[in-house]
Amino acid sequence: MTKRTALILPGLIALAIAPSARAATPPPDLAALEQQMAALKISTLRFDLQEDVEIPALGALLGKHGGSPLVFVVAGEGVASTAPEELEATAGLGGLPQSRLRVVGGEAYEYRPSAARFDGHRPWVSRPAKTGEAAPLGSGGPLAGTAPGPQGTFGGLVEELNGALSITESGPATVDDQRVIEFDAALNPAQLLERLSARAKGRLGGGSNPLEGLGEAVKPSGKHRSEPEISKLELEVFIAPNGLPVRTRVTVQLQKTTVIFRVDTLATGIPVEVTAPPAAKVIGEAALVRLERRRVARLLVRARRCRGKRNEGSCLTKTLRG
Image: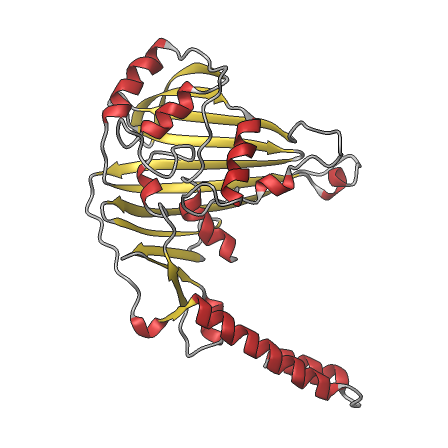
């Protein structure tokens, strides 16, 4: 699993979009639940998450008929605390714990087994934690922002719902054995692009975000083209009677690719104690980069020595394996 999967863990909760000036009137049930939600102040929780990426089959990409879409599913789980800011989470394709992330004491630790090949079997790579990298997990969903709103832990999510272009009540449902009411909202893609562009330029703080590269991907391709190529941006929120957003799900339709982020809040007010990996198993990210560069330089030197040899192919193969 690549480093991108590890970034998914905090980043699923880090996205925020400014409210639209054409906000829809919320349904009466939502207005009542928002008061409950805004009053909640939660410092710890247990969660699980899932990211589905649906890509058209090769035939469809080539303009031909046929073939089911390719679906990649990354799933994970974890615990988080907002005071102090701590996080421990795992994720991977099909839910396998291929990526691990810990945030504790102002440091983030990513588990990368490949790193152990470069330096004394140290698979944990450390770096300074980004602002809000752990705290957003207490904010209730992918659109809750990187910090609690002024009204409480879920103040940011309340603002997003109030700023929706349209919002409907889908009725009662059951999520994780809890009775909830589902609300479906349509959001403004243009404001998503504006927020992502601001993040890319460093004007906004916050934790890592799996959509930060989306702004580049959906830039207009022609000089006279101004409309974003995100055709759908939807938010589904499942709220319990006490105002807790038990599940939030965001659907982004980007040209022919659909990405769905889902986060479930499984429990709140639980004990959370995250410990850093043993120091003997940790290497700093800057030190790892230096080691990787040195290894590449050595491989290039060895590869040049294989040129002109009778067994050049096998020599190169052996060099790369080494």
